[in-house]
Length: 395
Ligand SMILES: Cc1ncc(COP(=O)(O)O)c(C=O)c1O
Image (cartoon, rainbow, N blue to C red; front, side, top):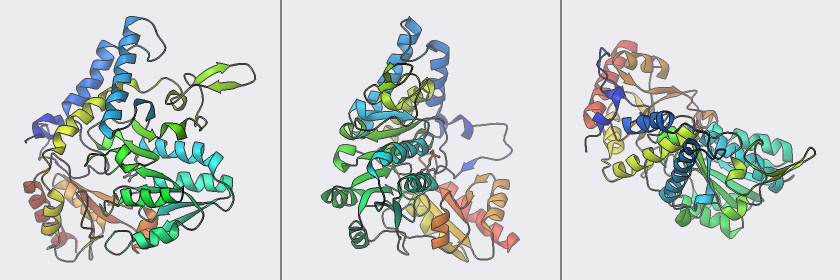
């Protein structure tokens, strides 16, 4: 399936070289069906969501709520279990703060892994500071996977919640979350799954997975910026206080105090990001079609890239998303990224918001090429060719 024609940015005529976009793990390109959907909101029904009885407002509210229904269907949730946030980062902060304040106390443990993104570390550091609980990190193995045995042992340490990435944004590892959730639930431990890097690549079913919370961002899966999703089991969400407060989340407000409305609205204070949430619905429809046509560029890229002289590829998991993180002896990843940009190739360099993992790997940074449905094998070959050229020039 040739989907490249759907991405205006890949068709730009005013560039002096073709764009080889290999940074989709940071943010994916946007198909025109999604940008047009966002424009449609502004051009056709720009009224305020949940607050108006006039026709434009009704249209906007219906489109917003239909998007919620579609997202629920997309991950196998109930509609009331879908909360629109501004990002996965906000989704995780919501759980850490709102669930954590009433469920964590001195001596309790939050179990993370060393491959978590900062967005799944810092919110827990903050709530641990407030509640006197602490974080335990499960260390990844050399091949970028986790030991289930070590995980099972770690669960015995007074753990109250496990917050774990489904897929690592550095190794690409897809963690065995179903088993991990099952093991945690046997001990009555809650599990949050950070699906930022998995939802863009695979079908997720929260009912089968049985996670308690799941977070992802729209902009990594063809969607607009500024919108994320938090799934939470209704019976857990109903017991949680709002994370932020303001209009739209209340039942009653007096001069002294307020009471909260039911979920999911309790967690969506203020005027929502209607255009983005509506366009996200079109993004997941588009993505669902792509799921049926995935050719494994990840495997192809590893095969090709491991032949580059002096390359160290981090992690070597068998089950992974199409991400290759690497360093080349004698070449700084930043210099490589600059060099490749000159050739029209965008890769990421730095710590990838995973400083604890960088320190576990004993590096300060690395380069990362990440592939998505619009990439192809010619681009991988082009990348390898230009890296080889870079090595000659920069070494
Ligand atoms: C695994 C993972 N978790 C969380 C995030 C944070 O996502 P966002 O910046 O969209 O909130 C990212 C972003 O790169 C990620 O890769």
